[in-house]
Amino acid sequence: MKAVIREHDWRGLMSAVIVQAVEDAKSKETEKALDAALWLVSEDVPLWLEAVGLDCADTIQLVTSGKARKARTSKRR
Image 1 (cartoon, rainbow, N blue to C red):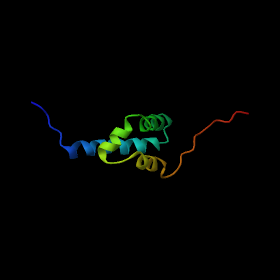
Image 2 (image 1 turned 120 degrees about the vertical axis):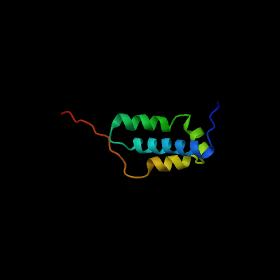
Image 3 (image 1 turned 30 degrees about the vertical axis):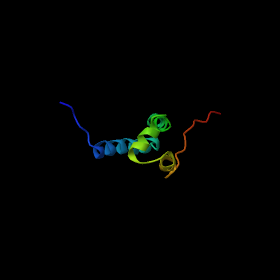
Image 4 (image 1 turned 90 degrees about the vertical axis):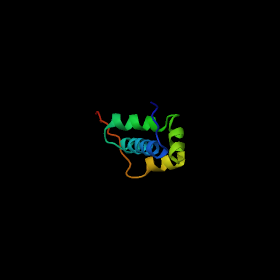
């Protein structure tokens, strides 16, 4: 039997993945933030955005909004 996925079902799922990636990119956990940021700039994201009705400019605004995260560095003297 062939499974049928309705448009509103996959759009919600794809939107949730994009929102989670944006939130993860703002994470204080460096590995999580880097992984999400790499996915958000990958060549697959424009297809995902188009499928849910967004464009790349909207995503850049989502990622850059809110508090900027400062990288922690160790200072050696």
